[in-house]
Amino acid sequence: MAREKRCVPRASDKQQSSSGKKTKEDGETAAAHDKRALTVTVDPAVLECDACFGPLAPPLYQCTRGHITCATCMEETGQGCLWCRSTEATMRCRVMEHFLAAVSVPCSFTHLGCAAMVPYGDREAHEATCVHAPCYCPIRGCSSPYSGVSLLDHLRHNHPEIRRTCVDRGSLSAIMMRGGELARLLCLADDKDRAVAVFLLVVDQCEAPATGRSLWMVRLKAEPPADVKEEEEDESEASSKEEFRYKIMVSGNGGVLSLVGETVPTVGRLTAPYRPTTFLFVPGAMLDSHRHHEGSSLLLFAELN
Image (cartoon, rainbow, N blue to C red; front, side):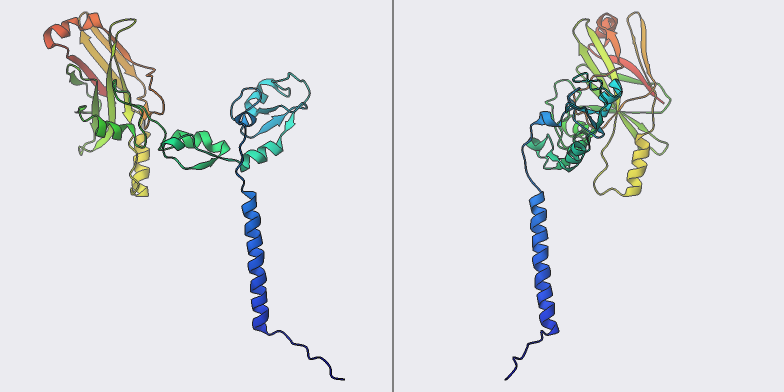
């Protein structure tokens, strides 16, 4: 009786079979990976602390009744729950921590052009530096908000009427603010006449509760160009961290007013309307002599050191 001849698979057939099997496995793995990425709708309240209603961020704690609180609230209560006032010990909520680590949310400025999806815990940090975030200009009458550029670039392109004055470090410089002039750019140069820092001196008209003008100053931080070299960027960053003291003086009817600041605030972009914490208020009565002799001009002195 003739025996059936068995076909022994060749090496090439084995390779093709193995390759086909691997391709199938890779496809199944990719399909499984795709199934892991889900788009879901979650009530924002679920991602908030049950005590302070702030955004949840690890470490998280849960009481025996299911309330989830942040670390800040836990520090205030020790081991109890700030929501239900339970005195029973709380424990780490690892499940919620793992859930938050896997959650990505869109930037709040999607309507302004940002398409970034960021981890939930990094959302605030991202939005604080997002180039699409709405920014505000401190110049009265400016049609803010705007987005995408630093305040310095905004002033250069949208406020060409703002004049520039070069000042020397450690010297009191006289500045005549003409009638209707709302701000002045002060440029501090080094020994080679290279701009070291740029400051914005703002003059706000005050009507109530007292009539006069308030003067304040900020340092403008320039955004480095995209093609700048790493060494130049580090040098620029180090220069921007240098602190400057300043003095503003106004001489008028009845005496001299002055403001001395230990550190000039540095501003890159204003993501909220700016409210100066330190300013020099000059009453309208003190400026009457200036108005008589110089029209509506204001003579002041500024020093940077």
